[in-house]
Image 1 (spheres, rainbow, N blue to C red):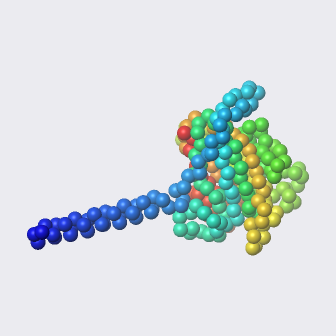
Image 2: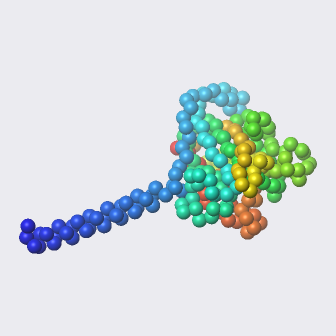
Image 3: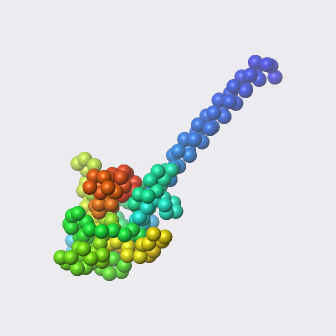
Length: 238
Ligand SMILES: [Cu+2]
């Protein structure tokens, strides 16, 4: 091997090595935990009543959790910059268009009073109801007129809104009752909330929480409430 050729190969090797390291770095960055999408699990076809008419639609299930902090296993935030912020277990959700979505949310977080009682209501679900630890109801307000009792407290809401701009609308809102078993040392037993909704046209929809759980800033709508991925996310319908 000539001296020049050997130098050329060395330079090429370094260049290839650098490219490999760059690609590996890009791969790691791309695979950061906050990029993980929760995809609906297919359940086959089901007959669902839509506006009083029976329709056969594909169905999927989605299960996620809401936590009082971001210290839970598999938390989705890259580097977990705010371990003390409340958080959903997932931010990016993905389901097919024109499909029944059976959603289960386990709420491990405590809570308090909403600043807008509208969000006690179950809105936009199949049958207009949700199941709260197995009990079917149209809202979470077991003692009407009294929202100071702990039993009426809300931990978070799952509120699905429209797409950004003039795209299709999909409004679904379900309150997540506060977990009464949360302690300083244990998440305790979650309140299990389940409900179903039907997706429409493809698009990227937004969802967020409507319980003021975002720390002391912006009237409790700062921090976890105003940073994507903690108390908000997307539902990609495709
Ligand atoms: Cu919240």
